[in-house]
Image (tube, rainbow over all chains, first blue to last red):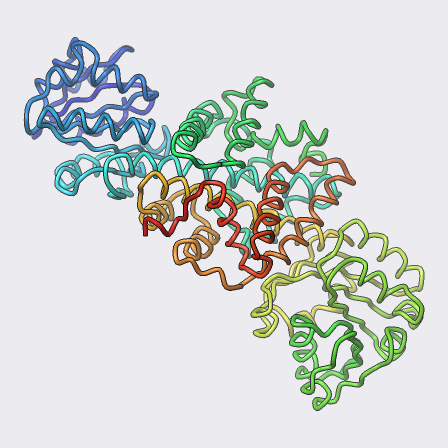
Length: 296
Length: 296
């Protein structure tokens, strides 16, 4: 039994913390929102702030919405840093800036503690089923120390490199996913408006080099007009924002990531913040004044 | 044994015609270039023009570079149309305009002959190995009539819809392939310039929703700096040109296809017409003043 801290008990953090508790560990939690009853019943101790969590725990997990939230939880007054002592390990599982992550890690090291960035993919479903993909940045030794706990929450666990590289891997994943959704959208919409059956086109393409899980799953959503999330557009907007701001800072041009962000922005303007990200095709459909479903 | 015509004996057409000949059929050929010795030795009859090919053949295959070439071979003086009579079947296996294809089919029907569009993917390697993917547009009955001959040339043979839909399927395929290559390029380049190991990023991504054959194969080419074709950029430029002109004619906006074409244009400006299409990443690298290989 280890003493674990968990800060951030939202739709992702709550089930993840629950898995650690069920795994037999002592849990110290803090969150801005309400602590779920199941955690309290299960014996999790609620702490007044991040400092108290850090003082009581060997490993401290954070699962927060965005970069400034992580900065505040770690480094604001009575935050995690104030409760650190040598030998502790901070593990940020939020999806945040790769570049800020490198700075956060340096600051945590200065307390004699260790740091891993370990963002996840798989969403709420993956968090509940403990099937998350976990992309880790940091050193081998703390990775091995954290691995048994990662294995309570996820399935595909990879140490991709040093601090920040876990976050970079997540950003790369979100770029490819968004741009492949858009590619499938352009292809199926053009075919549909030209009078072809997009379902037959999709089926024929699945045999060749255009095949992907995105074509299979998100292409099917476009055909069936099922845009219930899934993964919400507003979350993907946050991820592409990380990609674009990182690119701007280090001097990389991401023309199609930029366009995809604009298409997401257009979806939001049409009330689509909470659509599944495959709903990006609707922005293309608006431009074309034609819906894929019209030929189905 | 059937009497077959084959017009266009380039790098694709020659091995395709060869497979028909080896399959035991009588072949009547015409080409602007030299007829390969193997076809002549095999017994193929060289005709002076498309008209003579059509007069001698039950089925007439064409494999030509672009839309105007097909128009000329079919409908210029002494072309295929001049040799048609009721019951013949014209099969265009070139990759050309989906919209023009519908018009070509109507004109061929007016002679009492039938028409299939049957573009392929798989390239020169697939043509030689008789493993082409064949995407067919037209009616069921001529499709069944042509199927035994398609099976001598390819492996994945799908009737995707009516005339033009085969060409549309090929265009959709080429849109998705180009845009997925670009997506992989943006993701790996950003990660590499941020200091991550792009090979490890690629490996981690292959487990999740970002995985695709493009990430596997073309991502590997970007890491290994192997831009020998494969599929040449200038051919993919032709395909995206078909996509963009079709889109303009029917009123569809293809923002990322347009950007990918510009990136291919930039590659050509740097001497890259004959690079493999994964070399598109070099245009992104030029913009970023950084090569993925610098971190490898």
